[in-house]
Amino acid sequence: MTVPYEIFVGLRYLRAKRRNRTISLNTFVSIAGITLGVAALIGTVGIMTGFKEDIQAKILGTTAHIIVQDRMKDGMTDYDKVALQVQEVPDVVAATPFILKQVMLTTPSGVQGVVIRGIDPQREGKVTELAKNLSTGELSDLQKPVKIKQPPADDPTGTLVETEKPGIILGKELALRLGAFIGDTVNVVSPPAGPISAIGMVPKIRTFAVAGIFQSGMYEYDSSLAYIDLAEAQKFFNMSGSVTGVEIKVTDVFRADEIARSVEHALGFSYGARDWMAMNRNLFSALKLEKTMMFLLLVLITIVASFNIVSTLTMIVTEKQKEIAILKAMGATKKSIRRIFMLNGLIIGLTGTAIGIPLGYAFLWLIQTFWTFDPTVYYISRIPVHVLASDVLLVAGSAILISFAATLLPSRQAAKLEPVAALRYE
Image: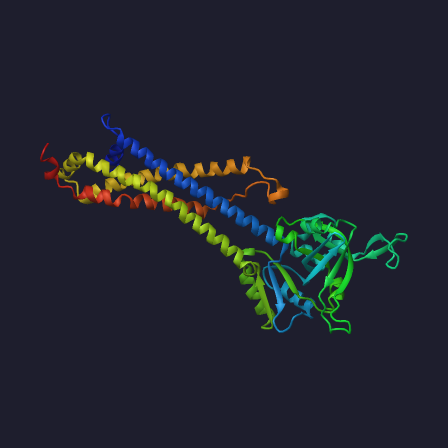
């Protein structure tokens, strides 16, 4: 197979003669600029993707993939029937009812407003990762009363007597704020939901004993979530025979929106289903926008490097005027001359990209290996990194495209050169 002569001429032009090393230096600087731009893009995009997937994993470890609620009323009374219907929908793994309310937790050393969830301990582990996130205790502890010793209510200084209290699971940060740990009691205060009595609005208060501590890895969840048994929640919130909704786990989290539509179709108009992406749309939209803006800003490094390509090719055109004139006199067309200098720019872009991609991977490996954090402060011990093949292709494609665009002006100038004008004074 015959190789086009434009490739040999282009490679020869990139090498400098002994009397002029400027072109060789400019070629090296151009390649180095593209290399650094590609490496910076690979590193930034890999870290942004890693953080996004880390947050996504923590959210999905605490919340369900899909939540079903009744559109026509506040609660759901036929939740067992709905859960059975939902489990028959394709790609649904499990379903379980839940109650979600805002309350206030009080202890002798602290007060905190939180979101409390009533769950079925037997089925919750099939839908969320709560069982795996428990650092102390088990989900089954919610179904049995916790035995504690405390003084009688009418005699705080009296002899301690053994009593039984329903269990509650607290987030790690929430437990630290309240100063409540395994075996300690917590008062759950609910806003008054019934009619106003003669003495005014009286909140409902019930004492629970801490049966477990969970750590999800997200401060927002660990500081504002508590779990109690579903039956206890129904009693406390006067929701006998009803729940807030049904939470669902699916096979593919990225198809949760499609499966949610299938669930709505199976249940009918009166039920609405929301997937995890819709419930956290603002967060993931912000992360996507941040990743896009960082990509566009760092592309400027590659664009700046492309100016070196323009200057290098312009210098080559100026120095090689006689050679270009001779090529045209021997029959080379304008298209061939343009192709020679376009190939020069592509060679610079391809070389810089080929070096920059592994350099970006090496940079990420160094960060992930040697840059550690205190997990008690930052909730992560290392920077999460994940490089997607699509991101690598996007970075490489943009670098090569910018390098090619930088060749258009110099190659056009070279093609317009007239042999007579170039050789007149030779």
